[in-house]
Each structure stands twice: as structure tokens, then as C-alpha cells.
Image (cartoon, rainbow, N blue to C red; front, top):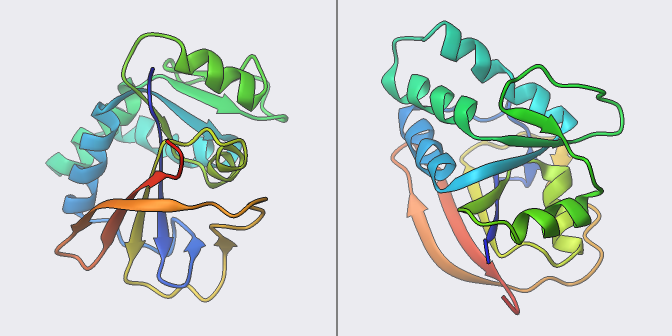
Length: 183
């Protein structure tokens, strides 16, 4: 059975804010490898619309290899978007989910393939509450945002995780790799 791997960026003070972090080549290389570990990525509307930026980078490369390689990985991976407001998506490799989150994820999990990647805060929270996350990767950036969306808002039950690995980046971030209890 395929694993469901949730990955998110967070500031030191616990907020998920893509505008607060400072991406660099090392981070793009890391997420390029991450994208290649799966064959489908799940996004909520807000994160999906933020990720559409990478479509433009594929069409107009920056000349920076790690950035451009990540854009290609992001472009290639099939994306399932969960939204009550989006009626269509114009990215060739994206589609709106046909089922509710639980049913779609269970259906995907039973299909052959590589890992299922989750990159939206709201979906990560929902999937943790449903007990469907197998691995959780948190990249903590050396930034204090001061405000934003807290990562662990609305978790319904105590969730125990086991730290299985860490990765330290030259730019000061650290990724913590957790297995969720009972997995």
C-alpha cells in the first residue's frame, strides 16, 4: 500500500507562511527529490493557486538549475486539488478531486504507484485528524514570522509521532521526519 507523506514549511514560531521563508538552491533540490518520491500531490485551493507559479517558471526558466528543476518536477507530478470554490483547473497535470478527502485518499492509496504527497496545511490537518498520514516532514526555517496560520490549529486529538530522521540545511533550516504513531 502507498504511503501518505505530508510535508510543510514552518517558521520557528509555528506559522505556515510561504512569504516568510527564504528559499534557496538547497531547499529547491530537497523538494525536487521529494516530488520525485511520489506520483501524485494533493493540494487545497490556496496552496494549489500558489504552486501555479511554477507553471510560469517551466515556460520561462530562470536559468537557476535547482529552481528550474523543481519547476519541472512540480509541473510533471499529477495534482489533485480539493476545493469547494474552484470549478476547473488549467494546469494539464491537475484535476479537481471527484470525492471527499477521505474517500479520494483511500481510493488513491489502493492504486498502484509511488507515495502520495500532501503539501497543503489544511489537508495535512484534515488527514491527521482522519488518521491517514503515514509520514510527516516539517521543514523549520530560521525565521520568526510573528503571525500567520498556525500549523497545528484544529487538530482534534492527541497525535503521537516518532522522530525517525533529521536533515540539517546549510541555510539554517532543519527538516524533521516523523512517523505517526500506530503506522
